[in-house]
Length: 47
Picture (cartoon, rainbow, N blue to C red):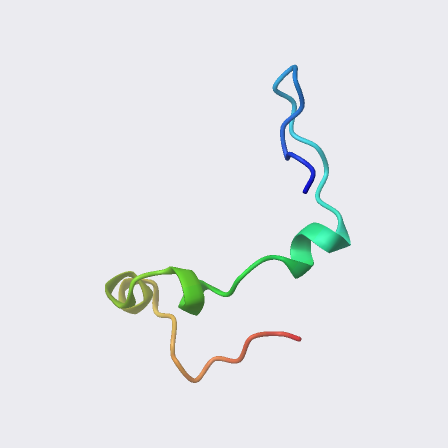
């Protein structure tokens, strides 16, 4: 996996491969934070 930051500290542009690796908020956030943010369990993850 390619680092998001190079040796000089600059952030590279995200590519489609990076986005495919993202997880939904429901997978990574605690339930208490999801409720505060108004994330509903019935919301669907885009495919």
